[in-house]
Length: 157
Image 1 (tube, rainbow, N blue to C red):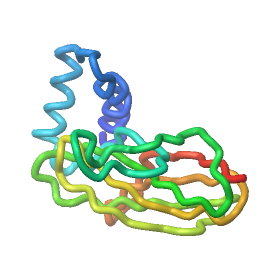
Image 2 (image 1 turned 180 degrees about the vertical axis):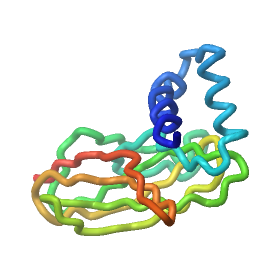
Image 3 (image 1 turned 60 degrees about the vertical axis):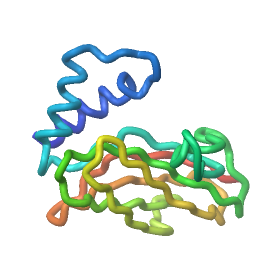
């Protein structure tokens, strides 16, 4: 059941995320039902980006500043992995594991907590010290299982 709901929510995320695109009544109802009645279902990873920085104030506070998703990073450079989540209202903080891998080997594992919010954003800064294609895995740690929510590839030269 959880996988079905997460799949539905991830499928809706691009529709809801586009500014100016009005969701259908059915799409809006699914999102609101999940937010207000989805306690126990866990968080949904809505979006990830690779950023040069994070906006610290103003209307764009907590947003990605300098989106470099899909671009090559130089060895030794730092970048932010920015993540947006939705977690049901009243949900206890959800533990997410962010794993940085190179050639199938975990090089770093970090944790973030996601509160029950319609739109929670968080980020991690990481220095990419080796050349290659890095895979960032975002995993929901439920305590009894670990559910992969998404991945992001980052190329380092």
